[in-house]
Image 1 (cartoon, rainbow, N blue to C red):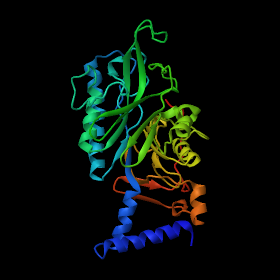
Image 2 (cartoon, rainbow, N blue to C red; image 1 turned 30 degrees about the vertical axis):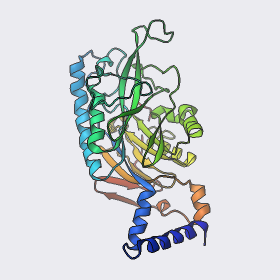
Image 3 (cartoon, rainbow, N blue to C red; image 1 turned 90 degrees about the horizontal axis):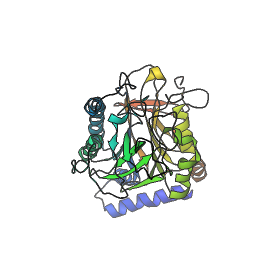
Image 4 (cartoon, rainbow, N blue to C red; image 1 turned 90 degrees about the vertical axis):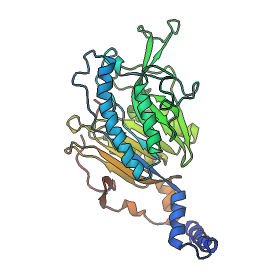
Length: 365
């Protein structure tokens, strides 16, 4: 008997002994499985876009558009909450859209205090800072859903003229991921470093290596879209910060042969032996689709170049991901998820990556 199987046998015996007849073996196994996993969700969002992102607009008009997307986010959060989701990820550019200039995006930007300097709950302290309406709504969603929430938005940060990196207009503008805990506290932020033709945003002077700890799965790392193709922050985050789980907002256009969203996400999970929670926007006419919850052994994913609707993906994920090599050495058997079949259930979709896939089509924007 292999070491893994003997440990499982001992665990099952222990369940029966401790239960003293009060619980069935099935209940013990279920409790053990629940203790070793967490429930995650990603949402592929068909975002409502500005009809003219180059035009100048007011803050109020910008908020009206962004609130339409945030209304959809809130609906998805409440659906996910009913299924016991503990962490949920939304895509890059899902709230404000894309193809702005530096000037035209300004009304869409929230002020972003540093979570390392300021402990802040935007939902409970809405008047602490000006121009934080989007952060407030996201914070309140995390509370309502009782979950960790990861989203992407544009942010602004004033800078002094003596700062050698300060732009001429006196402010930094960042493509920013934010993380909220289940009580609505702003846990951390990540400012995208490897921009892809994003004239509206600045590159941070230093690379953010952003991690956050959760009570249900330990440490997560954060990066955005194009970052996944670069050593820093993506690989350095895994190498130096003991990260086993990655949250990955993206706005990715698929381009054959090598830059297809699902394959890039899955390859990263397999190559580094981590879980990847990837949320993409959904605009098939732009070739933008492909989201998933990827472990080293299997993937729960959505890709559809014809359906205009988005998709909420929910999956139970191992706290300690096991790589392909480790799993085969431990059991001597192929994981069942490597066999070719697919299942769709209750608004969630699972596909094995060995199954035929719709033809993808990249290049972000």
